[in-house]
Image (cartoon, rainbow, N blue to C red; front, top):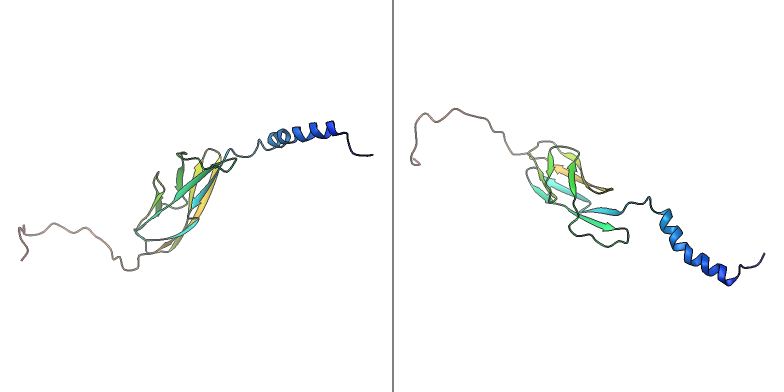
Length: 134
């Protein structure tokens, strides 16, 4: 069997992008990437994450709504991507996750402990009222 006629090849070539598009309808509408993808944060310090959201064509979507979560409450992330570590005496690995629409991305964060932070405890009030340093 030889090559199909020119007109049939032309119709097939025109239909191919439509077929490819319809086959990829299961693909997410957007993708998301966290920058930086890994990080180290000291106890009681902060680290800024940025979420880069892109459409199917790869163009960046500015102003996309991103939700941030972490795998451990020792690090919290606010709505702007600012991670804040609590005081801890133990090193931990925490996963920071960003989600938007049907896309999800994660970053690995190493939390360094505070080795010389000391401890706080509540004491009773002063026995004498002080008005100046002596």
